[in-house]
Length: 151
Image 1 (cartoon, rainbow, N blue to C red):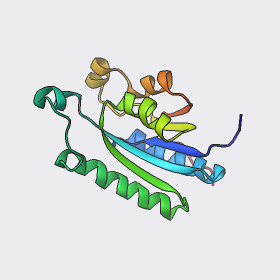
Image 2: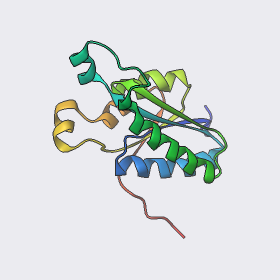
Image 3: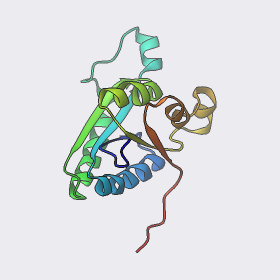
């Protein structure tokens, strides 16, 4: 068992909590010289139920995620992270992050925000971070709020 992380996966959804998770992952990546993988999952469960198909990655519903991750990638590169990869994919966020991409990319740390959904969505769907913690094959860091920086 190694005490250093080599491949970090950061779940991004556009929330303030995900932004804090991203900022924390930058520092962890620097300390460990780890590759940073950013993922934005377009929740297509209701889309697929209505259209009976999975959206094409070129559909407009992916545009927000692509723009968001491109901005985060630029921030990571500017912070000195040399290996940054982005993934904008369809599916159920909890399954795609914790099962599919964590295994596919051989991730050893997932970083996510504590809550990206509003209260009603969380009640109906459950907490994505809770699902990630319970089903991930690797360590998970759930960032609750902005951390005060030491200067």
